[in-house]
Length: 230
Image (cartoon, rainbow, N blue to C red; front, side, top):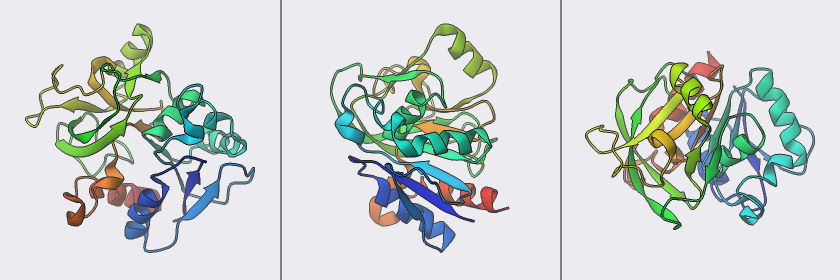
């Protein structure tokens, strides 16, 4: 199996994702610069977190028009799995691969802390190592993580079981108090229609080793690699 990570000016979690993937793959991961137009043969594409282009205009707006994104969109539309984390989620919405938009946090402040998430759908390449309803702990670090969409799209996401994660408390209860950024319906991550694209604001790559304070994110990468390699 081959995997690649797209790198933009301002990416700051690209190495973290590389380490997480290589720990499961046991082989190097290709780092692909945003300015290129050719994407190597790959079985998985990851768009990492950070502040691409300094978050000018809107978070992810400029990155979505980088040369390499035309190929990313083409590969995604052909079925290649794509994972977008934090800024990567923002880029995926700006590129039209996922619906909705990530707005400024409700408290208008940058938030950096651990949060609890409830796994809403374990029937995907990305969440197959979890159980539906399972509570996991991931870090967040964002200023624009407030997911919003129109009522009809929200109804479609809910009806098609395309919400991957919701913010919750440590007991798995989805409450207003457990919502760190004001996201509609406490949404922390969503799938595309085929569940081959996942965008999420929390950072699973930051909890893959006990030295990081936990391993809740490790299962995502191990399950994803196992599923894609099968």
